[in-house]
Image (tube, rainbow, N blue to C red; front, side, top):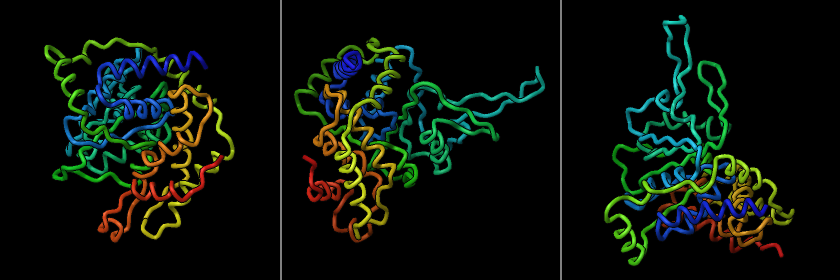
Length: 312
């Protein structure tokens, strides 16, 4: 486990050296990667979403990285791949798409049509795609970082509930403070520091980190606490759609992964509370009255966290 802690620390420090002022978000995203989940970054343009994805990919030696710019004219085959006729052998061969990678940046995912968005459902949930009736499983890391702009709606398609549920976590980067922004200007005076990044962990070490997450201890009381937090969304009248057991699984795995980045091999209640809104809120669909009154998934999770007793 000591080696696992060291890998986690190196990875976090390497990205923090390039992405200033975003320590909490970086740790969450790395925990999401380590828990075999996927993350949706929702924030305004220019906050460093794409740079963060690149910094993560460049920090891992041997890891493949693909970026797909989602647009309205994109087709499912542009992501998944397609069967191409080979005249030399007089048969069809499968040409893999960019989804066959370790780290996939789905940039501005809400600009693609629902048909294209749905093409990611099987891959994100089952780590495989089915083309022409044949199953193609993924090997390696397979981590999806999707981005979307929450303030621009022209030419966009809201992500369906089933797609939102595939993301283990949704988080925002937000604006940095004045000193960090001054540091960003200094860093990019001549060139972009992300282009000078060196890998600090191997692909194999990341796979070992993902396996180590499964060994992090979590008491039965804390597992029940996770279930109670998620189940509390199902009895609320201000929600049209509550969180499913997939949310409970994601919160458990995220808490295990975050514990490693906090230097522990066991989960504490504070870690669950810290992650609950990021993991559960985006899965909730509010009733019209709740939306009009200014409520949000995060405000509802804050209420639930106050009401559910914390295990001692």
